[in-house]
Length: 136
Ligand code: UDP
Ligand code: MG
Image (cartoon, rainbow, N blue to C red; front, side):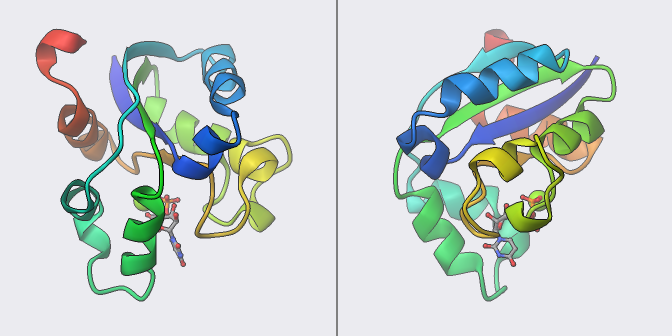
């Protein structure tokens, strides 16, 4: 079964949207296989988003991702990576399809409520970043 990582980002956690977001992914056919709430260190956030190092939004992204608690959620479903990105909507909430998580709960391209892995390989890597194999 394909695995992907959802992160409910600090803006959505603070706005008490976590329950609604989890309901949306479960209703979309995902199984939650591991979940926790945590406050990322700057080092952890930098490692997680290492692919974006050097981009103009990198430091603001680290500020944002460490600004409050996040909820990493490991999910399984057929075609999980593509399907989660559909449920999340486009990176920029203004361009996200109506009814998607980012359209409903995101504020702008930076503060966009949720993360979803972008490939099957990264789904494995990113779920393993937060959870040990024994937790699945
Ligand atoms: N981001 C940003 N400005 C941009 C692009 C991205 O602040 O111009 C932030 C946003 O929070 C996004 C994250 O950096 O979710 C990672 O960017 P990516 O391009 O990987 O988008 P995603 O895969 O999250 O849709
Ligand atoms: Mg990405």
